Image 1 (cartoon, helix red, strand yellow):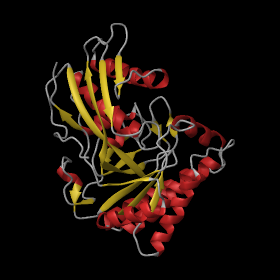
Image 2 (cartoon, helix red, strand yellow):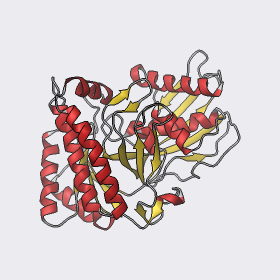
Image 3 (tube, helix red, strand yellow):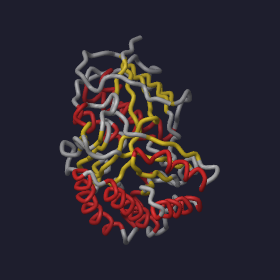
Image 4 (cartoon, helix red, strand yellow):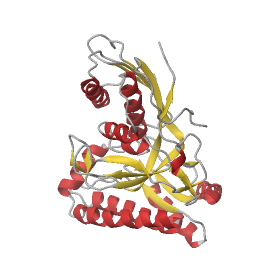
Length: 356
């Protein structure tokens, strides 16, 4: 499956309808916890890899919606409850900033299972931010778009860009934005800005889906509980700042092994802080632990493989691009029944011309 292609973010005239696509991203140095919930400002900066093959495409039209409300469809169905409230709240922010008063129609399709710890909200709100701002006639550069996307879902700030991306935590709305880690990826990424291509790393992700069901506790609720009730959380925050410095140094030196080691430790520390919360937050399944042991055995056999896990049971494996298929094959053999796929570095937000 190939993600839709379109230009990065050139300036366009105002339009009442716009369509945009955004890929998922997987954090190597995690975002877990908000310093300011209303502005979606994180407690720590984070580092991620935008992936190909899994994306959301969203069309927004400020056409009056359903009259007294926005008309929203996600994968062909009308959402309700928290999902609808989040989309409406985000569209209200776009209306406030653009001066548009009309309700909107939103049609979104995603190749990512929703609320399964596979970064569906990152791709979803990055695509919504891009399409809604373009449809509203806003002329946003990459930094401004990442700041806007952040208000929908924190990690969406990173999906605005392709390749390796740094989200600067900042201390206020203006200072909390994502930006590409320039020169970090070996070879050009199709559809990505040229400055993200360089002669450094050759990363890939092997994604191991053990369950595509919805999480038992949302990321927002889990972050709140971890911050409020885990004695390990302050130590993880402090360690994460050092992890980010080490990870960026590994990127600069082209040391994938060091990057993998730091990323795995950062993810395990995050989950340890969740498990130490009272009551504990446990996203893992028994097979999550099985996959972690499999990855450790693979490293002992000489394969470059390092685990990272987000808010869910599914495991992503950082590896070298040239070794990705071998790692995927080994995981399929070791974890029968799991859906295992290879993902390469992907592009940032793309726009498609659309009108009604």
